[in-house]
Amino acid sequence: MPDFKVIEVNQSVYAVNDAIAAETREKLKRDKTFMINLMASPGAGKTTTLLQTIKMLDGRYRIGVMEADIEATVDAEIMQNAGVRSIQVHTGGECAMDAEMTAQAMQEFDTADLDLLVMENVGNLVCPAETDTGANANVAILSYPEGDDKPLKYPLMFTVCHVVLINKIDTAEYFDFDDDAVLECIHRLNPEAQVFFVSAKTGEGFEPWIKWLIDNINSRNN
Image (cartoon, rainbow, N blue to C red; front, side):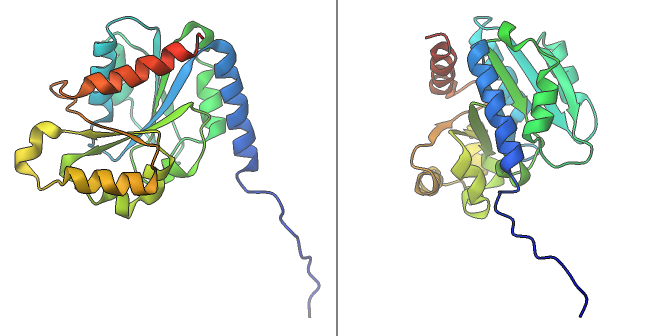
């Protein structure tokens, strides 16, 4: 028989990532910056939701946006055209941002000069949920056209999120979406999750979400 070594791995494969994420949170704390990791499937309305959120914050805060995609610069261009400080991050084929990529991207901002930093993660409900980026809060968007069964199919995403925005409620008449069922499922996975039903297109339902965001931004200065 050939000789071989047996290696006992006692450290999580995510240990290095988690250490970098912790350093990022310490930096955000020092700089009094609140950062959210915004996640959703393609087409759920991440960019539109973000634009509506910034509009409703009405210039009260200094905001920066990191747009993460495998390729293209479409979303960063949309943010720039809306007058929002933004950068485009290409993930080199990776399906989500990790803590190291997030820390590198943050170097393009003076976070001490920001009240709110938003990372719009790569669009999918799997990879972004698996890795700690160092953000202060995870926010997921689920839209009516996707169906109310997504928390059953992608439980980790809804387990790690502090907030879930149920978007496109203006399309309710066209889709068989059960509000009560999705709420029950999300809270079974994550009893602490805040769930807000919104329309990024019309602004309907945004007030509770905006209040939650303002409360968390302001808490950084207390």
